[in-house]
Image 1 (tube, one colour):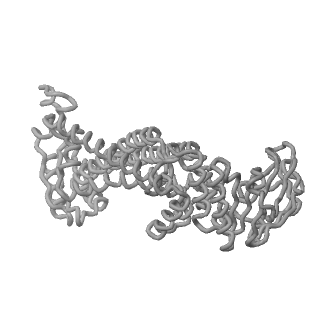
Image 2 (tube, each protein chain N blue to C red):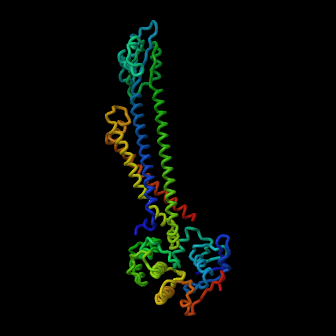
Image 3 (cartoon, each protein chain N blue to C red):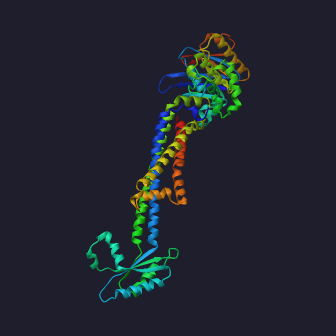
Amino acid sequence: MVRFENVGLRYGIGPEILKDVTFTLGRGSFSFLTGPSGAGKSSLLKLLFLALRPSRGLINLFGRDIASLRHAELPGLRRRIGVVFQDFKLLDHLSAYDNVALPLRAAGIRPESYRSNVKELLDWVGLIGQADMFPPVLSGGEKQRVAIARAVVAKPELLLADEPTGNVDPSLATRLLHLFQELNRFGTTVLIATHDPHLIAGGTLPVLRLEKGHLN
Amino acid sequence: MTASSILPVDAQPMRTLTLAMAVMCYLATLALGGLMLVEAAVTQWTSGMTSEVTVQLRASSGTDLRAETDKALAILLAAPGVLAAHRIDRADALKLLEPWLGHTSALEELPLPSLIAVAVDRARPPDLAALERLLLAKVQGVSIDTHARWQSQLIRTASTLRHLSLSILALIALSATALVIFATRSVLDANRGVIEILHLVGAHDGFIARAVKGRFLRSGFLAGLLGTIGGIATFAILGLIGAPAGSSTLAEASTELLLAAPSVALATYAVFLLVPVCATLLSLVTAHLAVMRQLRGA
């Protein structure tokens, strides 16, 4: 599903952030991406959700070489990817409900056909009471959960999460991890970037470790 | 959640755009009204001219002017396409000179040519060239004034004014387009973060363009409506304040424009209604193209 071959990334004329990164993520796999701050985890995720193009190397996503993608093809591919951003990236002028429904709305789905799903998801992440509230009045943990709900609402084939449990208490972190695992059981490929050792503690799932731009 | 609410557009730039567009539409309405006034005046003047011809006989030594005039009258009345012909007597001819020479006793001694006013059938006009040849052959000192020179000058002036009005309309459309492009870029720049998120959740450029267009649709229509109402009000005020001033004034022409026979007035209002329609379409199409261009370049 995801294949990186000798991928390098630099911003402008700066130093290489990612160097010769090579890995594959099989369909239905569940992996962690870890490493110290500044190791390039977020940059790697940006390449995965097509916010950046690599400076060199090959990235193959869903069987497509992303170097050959046209601008008009990007939305279709992005709809197959759910992303939980570290800084949430919620729209402050939309309610929690509207933020969660945004990917469905952008895909042209009629509101009446997704209303119950969105409410169910908000209920699951414990935010049904805050459905009409706007992000500026939500706590960090609540925003995190809205962001997670938005990432999974369209049942993506690939779920990318950048520090998804950074702002929630341990019990909720466990619940969210269970949500990701449940999605994974239904076939979603999951990659979670984190430096939370408790989240990786199980030890049975593959871990991609980034250090100074190199992947181990 | 409506389509346009996806983008949190700051109200202030949109209000400024609406105001500037309303001024553009107001000027466009005035230019259109001016164009219609010119067209109406030219039509009225030329229709009067084409239905009348003047035959002039100059006095010369040894010529019986009265006899020559009678001869010319007979030829004219017999010509096909001539509805009527009558001699303009001396008193009436002197009245025609008064606007230029004033009312003075010296006019009484002025030798005047004999003038014949000829009414022609506009549906089946006479062959004026053939008629002139016939008159020149049979009558001494005769000439025909078909007003062709005045008419061509009038048509040239009207054509200049028409081109001027159309140029003003084109400049207004160009300025309005530039305004909308500028405003669209402002909206996109102010919402760079929102657009990035919309792209990341899989929104097509068309989805974002629709969200922007909604704002410009309302702005363009409102501006068009305000500008057109302002323009019509200006013509109405011109008509009202100048009503007692007499005939052939701009005031009278303005009144005619708005309160003419229902068919004429309806046509006028229909032309004026083109302004909000065009303003809305221009806003919509320009905003769409500007958004798509900017997003593709992003």
